[in-house]
Image 1: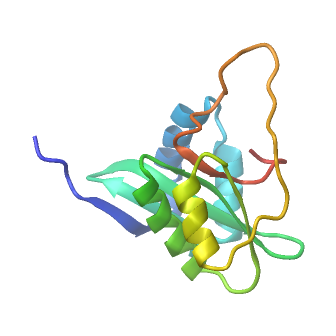
Image 2: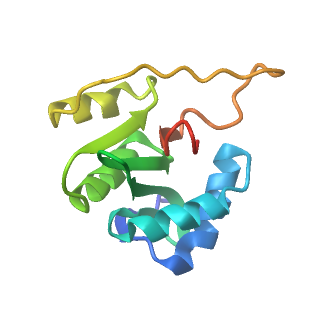
Length: 149
């Protein structure tokens, strides 16, 4: 069976939030629908979906920060999808941008450095009582921020 084409530049609408929340919960292990709805409301012009047919295979959201725009979360099935979603979000924003990207996503980090992004602060997430992370670190490319996940 041939892989259906993936559309990575679909503007996320309010009606898409249930499907986005379902996708997010599968990868993050928790219902974050309230946070996703709030982030979508804050910056809908920087909210995009990646779809394979009608199935969500990635999304990105953003918000206003105190000193800059904050992009995240960004979850995607592949690094290529993540980069396309991030390009869309960046195109929807003006001014300074902050992104909390996982260290493991070296190609995406390199692409951001090519766009003149510079690392500012290290971030170490620690867990207690289990050996595996709660989320899927291979598909969680960017978090919303340490305070939101």
